[in-house]
Length: 165
Image 1 (cartoon, one colour):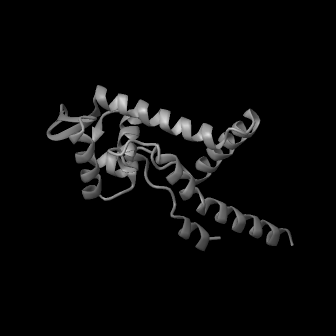
Image 2: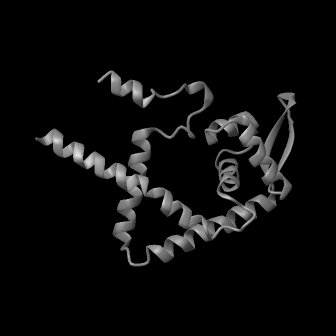
Image 3: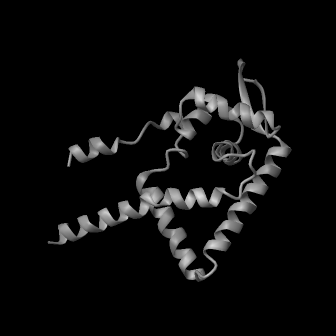
């Protein structure tokens, strides 16, 4: 019986997580029109991890290199990032944020904070702290692939793990 109750809890959690997309869409409505979510992701990752090659950015974004290239071009056209030669391999280019890109990140952060304040104004500090703690725990349970370096390998595919149970 306990397994059945746990199963229902996981099913309910799956329904709630599927609604996160709507929350995310509402939050990015306040972003400047010339900065879609993918551009915001490029800026955020460059800020978090520092300069990097396009391949690493593609890996962190978990998208194809050609798609990453389009996003990088969009961001570069706005002056939010620059490309410069990699000192370790002159054939490669490194991507880095510009001062203008840092200012754009500040704008995005402010828009996100304002959206959260608007929608969660009636939540207590304790509610927010608990949500932050649980979301961090959820992300850790799944593994944050963006934080893993290329030489650290890949975590087990969840389908393989389920088959092996």
